[in-house]
Amino acid sequence: MIRLFGQFIGCLALSGLLWLPAQAASNVRQAASPLFNELSRAAPGLDREVLRHALAAMQCAVNNGQPAAQRLAVIDYSRPSTERRLWLFDLQRKRVLLRDYVAHGRRSGENYATQFSNSLGSYQTSLGLFRTAESYHGKHGYSLRMDGLQPGVNDRARERAIVIHGAPYVDPRLAQSQGRIGRSLGCPAVRPEVARMVVDKLKGGQFLFAWHPRQAWARNAAYFNCKPQQLAGLR
Image 1 (cartoon, one colour):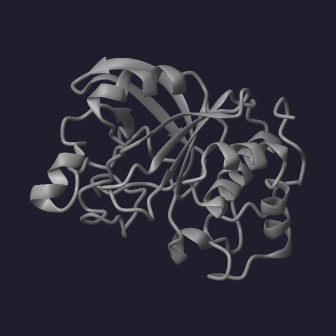
Image 2 (image 1 turned 120 degrees about the vertical axis):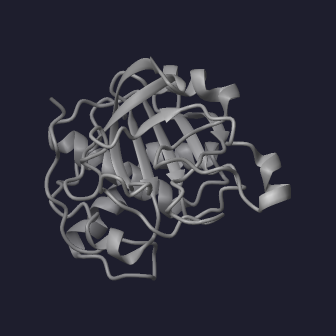
């Protein structure tokens, strides 16, 4: 069973928006490592603060017993759906494998996602750190199950059937007619053209981090209990 890592405490958000407890700030600074520097150079379009928080969350998970991963996906839900807001990183080679479009839940917002939930039937996106699990063939074709690692934030992901799958509504051409791409029932759906690659690269215990600088999320997402260690296997 996926081990849920420690209850998160305090405040964490983009620099200047919220006060960070000293330990949380230290953990984020620790994420500014050689790994961070190389990934930020590889992905200049990704906000550096979002990347720092993604690596801090991953570090927190590893420090609390999760195995180190080979790949990391980062979604910046502060960006509109009409932008390529999903990054897929190879952590060993320290390079970007993909930057592409990703959907948010239909009740999370229109072009911008503004509402997030961990509740059954909410049809909203969940934030935070996820561990990817098994691939399978379902009603959306080749798909990937995930387990949310943060209690109260995303730990009902499997129960909610929050999975990565391809969907024809993830189409930037829709922006011309409706001002946004299509929306999911809460899943981070991707374009059918890249779905198999995304699933294959992320299946089997990789990390996915979904970010938004929303204050309520930030209060529940600080990596306050984590020791500032270097990620095992990612030197």
